[in-house]
Length: 254
Length: 254
DNA sequence: CGGGTGCTTGAACACAATCAAGAGATGTGG
DNA sequence: CCACATCTCTTGATTGTGTTCAAGCACCCG
Image (tube, rainbow over all chains, first blue to last red):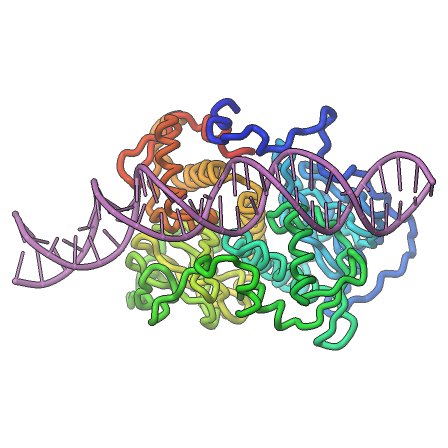
């Protein structure tokens, strides 16, 4: 650490952990409990194999609960049925990065062999489907179409990651914010006409900041700036109206 | 664009494209030509299915040649046999990001459906194996073990991407540089004892900068700083000796 | 209501970017 | 093989974007 500090003029750059040492900025709740409903109905989703549906167990998560923590044995694979979650990684000194937000239809826990590398936490109340990894792998081996589907899903995740790498590596704060809003619009089934969309941002400004590699203050300032420039209007702090998507696209830089 | 400029105090922030408009900072060469050797020997690599080896075609790429460009139809999948390549994405105004460097054993062209989203260019003279996507997919469907292998590969790529997201989102310039050097050490078969490793950095400072979300000048300054602090020694501009890996690990921040 | 949390805003600062110039390497053609 | 042109790398001076520090405001739920 002595050497590391030789490179930073100010020792205050890195946030100091509280004495107890929180694992995440948000007070982590307890693990989610499974619902014990032997005959629980599983909603049929288009395109996904019946074999997978048969091994899935329904699960609900209250707001802010930790689904799994980095380092836990990766024994389960999950699909989001409803709600929003965040995938989080931490540096030892407490700096946090939100790898991605998860929405209905997204899978997680797939990309790990052995141990989860990220923590996943519920941003809103969520309902999930849980698949034991063993059975999941068995289905993938047996059912070629399920395998291809999951494969395509991972391709999509990789493409998304690459877009984020470009964003974090080369975009300005304003471009990041605009890109993020467009992402949210793309994920949510937005209400309103094409040119007057309402979207909800369930996550906190801090979550957004940690996703975009910025600070809470910068995100807040950008929201204000976007509002002044009529790129967005606020119904509430977590409800936005986007009058002109094209204007946002121009801001996003690509 | 008028709106976009309202957010940047200086118009000079974004590099202006030259009149011709280069697709990449490096003058792009022509496409690689396949070697027409009907009976060409394919080196057997441990762990990979014979079925895949049978459909692979050998290919060589001279330094700086473009293997495929973003937007091309994704009709081929490649494996790196030898050499180093870079995966590049560009913003319309010319800002560049190097998503990753590819080394022997890495696959690319996998994560795309339809069109390549990234450009891949040879950093050094390279030899590749090329697989027609149709046949590749057929092998994956037929051979479960090959499928699982590729699946594991994509998992690994996702994990790597996530590490890069954390790096670009939350690490300082010095930490990025240290992390990058450790990555290179991990990929190259390093010469020397554990505590006196020599690694080669075939890519330019510009490539490194565009990979780490920095500028050439910052990368150069960090090399100098690391040298002054005895974290590295330079045999040449592209050959480094790392006297103490642990010291570098401290710098990397995780 | 009161206390806590999250959001917003302002002022000062720092890290890395930009601008600029020179040194070193690499390649080309006579 | 050398002279010249070009590109890459390094170093210095200055600037700017986003951070840090600080304080006030809004909202939610007890």
